[in-house]
Structure formats: C-alpha cells, structure tokens
Length: 176
Image 1 (cartoon, helix red, strand yellow):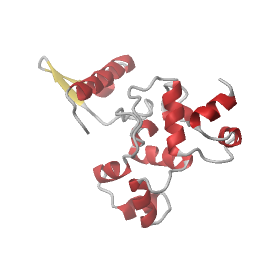
Image 2 (cartoon, helix red, strand yellow):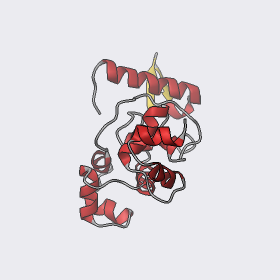
Image 3 (cartoon, rainbow, N blue to C red):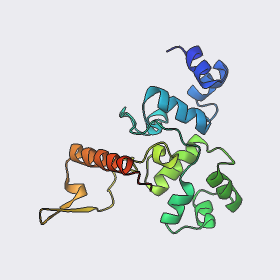
C-alpha cells in the first residue's frame, strides 16, 4: 500500500501520516485504531510494543477507553493515577471521558501500569495480556478433579484458552 492510499483511507494528509511514521507527532487514537483494524493487527504492533504480528480477535472499533474501569479495578483514585503518570487530576478525568486524545507514549505507559495490551486499554480487544514474558496473574483452572495453573500451560494452550474465553463471551453476550 502506498502512503497516499493509507492517508486517503484515514482521511488525513500524506504529511500527517509521514509525521506519525517519523514520530514527529503522536497519532490520534481514532487513526491508530483504524490502522490496526485495516491491517488486522494489534495496536501494540502498530505502536512497536509487540513485534509479533498477531491478528486481532475483535475488529470492532470502540469510541471509548477502559482507563476508568482499570483504575477502579486497581483501587486507584484519579489522583493516584495522576501522580503515577505525573499529571493533574483533571487530565485523568478528561482521558477517561475521551475528551482529550491519549498520546502514544501515554497509551504505552497506561498499558504497562495496568498490565494490559494497548488494544485492551483502547477497547479494541477483550484480551488483556500484552507481554507473555511478564508473570501473569495466577489463574487456577480446575478440571477433572485436578487444578491447573494458567502459567504452567504452554503458550499455545494459553492462546487457545484465551481464544475460547473470547468466543464464550461473544456467544453468551458477556460484557466485562
């Protein structure tokens, strides 16, 4: 694909696309999601956080992020998160409402803080895991009277389990 074709698809100038590619400007969230969706890759891949080109499970573009949900899961106030990322309380409120776009560096920082993928953070995927090298939260699965630790499963089995859980969520219309 030519740069001009991608710029036309994103409805931006070729110059803007060039600035994003050369990291002179941060890409806006909507364009980031559109690029990931178009190429069927994760936003982690587009942002260079993950070098494996794994197709996304969900291609639906969401117009919200999960910052508030994750902050509450971690029992954090807006002030707590603001201190972590060196900003003001009011900025967190604006990020959570989507009133202010998130910079690439902030997306990556928040994904690290909450230990999720950038796709999950932005609402583009329901898979939370972003780094298979980091220790995963300990999940136990009981089957046939035996307990299996998620972390003890081979990586391909973990992927299969995550895929199956995603399938069940979609089949039974389960929201997180």
